[in-house]
Amino acid sequence: MSSAKDFADQVPVFHGSGWITWEPIMKAFLRTKGVWKYIDGSATEPTLGVIMDLEEAPEPPTMKEPKEPGPKEPESSSLAYDSELATYKQVWKEHRAAMATWRAENYEAHSYNHKTQAEYVKAKADFDEGNDKALGYLSIKISRSLYHLLTESASESWTILKDQYSKTGAAQLYLDWIKLKEFYMSSSKPPADQISHLRSLLDRLSPHVVLPESLKTLILLGSLPADWRQSFQTLLLTLDPAELKMQDCITRINEEYTRRLSTGEARTSWAPAPAAAAAGQPRFQQNPPPTHWQGRGGNQSRGRGGRDV
Image (cartoon, rainbow, N blue to C red; front, side, top):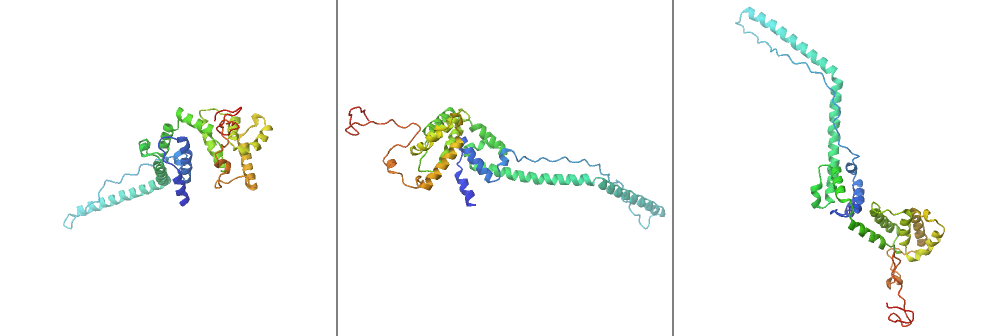
């Protein structure tokens, strides 16, 4: 229960921007709740099955039961009454027999119809419950300003939101590209999460920018900490550019990290930063700052061959 609540807390409220980041998190959340099928359309609204036609039931007789004559009525009245009563009983006997025949002949169709209708009622109730849950979860994870886009269908509501906000504008594309250029990995953190972040940046760009697999791999390798470079330069010497595969390098990175952990070379994320980092020495980036040359006089000197810093 607590883990499900913790997961729900990790899903941010969608305000209209960042769909490409919000969508997979929300999708995973809806899957854990068992209602994603009401979003992706795999759970369809049930329809009433074919109802078999029944034969028309026999009409009941219109003849009414005769009224018995009083004791003072003539004998002819009693004879007429007896005759009418006998006829009345015969008519109703024949009607009951016809009804019994009708029920027997239509029993199968009647039972089928009853079962079909009962199954439909249950399936419709189950679908409505799942659809309402999906809409509820969707409602609490979007801003109230977007409520006007919701309909009675969870699937339709999701489609409307996706059509409205999944398109990446030029400004967002530019920002993602800048983030990709400035991305670098830290040796103080496990590589898995950092690589996942890099993948998300690449995924955002992929619908609009064609990045060859070899370029993606080089971006990944270029983001490695400086003290990792030597390990992978040796690898690159043996490969043709066409053989550069991102997944292969990810495997090698994870293996290298495991090796460094076992030898004590890798620092865990909670360990203090090394003196070099604390002193402000730059870590390896995609675009490292230019080297600052110093003269004989130190930082502020313009010694022979030096330049301003």
